[in-house]
Image 1 (tube, each protein chain N blue to C red):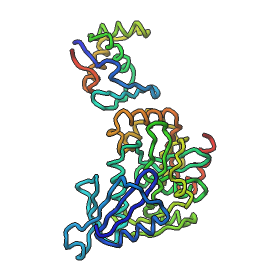
Image 2: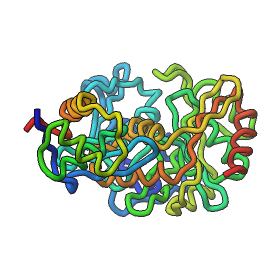
Image 3: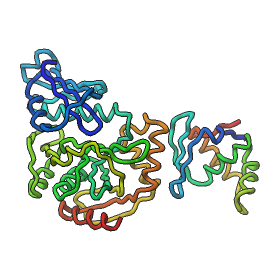
Length: 88
Length: 282
C-alpha cells in the first residue's frame, strides 16, 4: 500500500510538548499528533511511498533499529482516517 | 422596536430593542456610566413569543443577528436575563475580531490571570472576589484574545453570579443587585464592575497565568501540559473553528507561553489564598 499527503506547505505545525498541533489548511481542521505521525507526514514530502520506503526515509534522520514497517503502516492508516494522508 | 438601549462593553457595541420597557430600564440601571457605541456591532431583540404574549403572561423571546432556534422564552420578570443571554449569544456566535475563550479575566501589575471552567467551577465568583481585593476586572464570561499580539482585551460586563455565589460575594463586601429568582439557572445576581474597570475597558494586557478552577473540592494543584491546555481551550472557545488559521495561531501562541494549572479549592477564601500564592510564584 502506497500513501500520499499534501505538501508541507498545506500544514501549519507547532510542537507544543510531546504532542504536535497541526492546522490542516485544505480542511481547516486541527489535529494533535504524537510521534511518529508528524515525521511520517514530513517524510511523504519526497513523494508517495509504502511503509518500508517511509521507514527507510525516517531512518536517514532518526536512529530506528527496531522499527517495524507494520507499525508504520498502522500509523499511516490512522493518518488516512484523520484526513491528513490518503492511499495513493 | 418600541424600547431601545445601546452600550459599549470593551470592543463590542450592543444595541438592544425590546417590546417592553422593563428589560430596557433594568439595563439602563445596570450599565449606567458605560460608553455608548458610535456604530453597534451586535443587535439583540426581545419580543413577545406570540403577539398577545406582550400583555398576557408576557413571555420574552430572544433573537438577534445570530441566534439558536431552540432558545426558550423567559417570563418578563426575567427580561434582564433574556437581554444578557442575548448579548452573550451574539458575541459567542458572531464575533470574529478576537479569539474568544469562555474565561473570566482579572489583571494585576499589567498582567492578566485567566480562569476557565464550566458553570459552577467558580470562575465568575473568583474574578469578582479578586476585583473586590484590588485586581482590575476584565470580565467573567469571555476573554478576547488579540489575534496579532495575544493580549487580553477587557469585556467588563456585569458579572452574573449564580446561587451560593451571591452570598459569597456579598459577604466579601460586594454589592449584588438586581437578583432574579427561579431562572433556568437558579438564582442569578448581577454584580456591577468597579468604575475603574469600566473606565479602563479599552486597555488590553498580556496573559500571565491560566487556571482551571474547581470549587468545593479539597485543595489540589496540577500543572497542565501545553497540549492538554490547547485541547481544553479549543473546547472553551466559541469561535476557534470559524477563525481558522488565525485562531490556531493565536491559541498555539497562548498555550506555549502561559503557565496553566488545574486547581481544586474548598471555598472562596481558600480559593483567594491559593490564587495569591500561585500568582506570586509566576
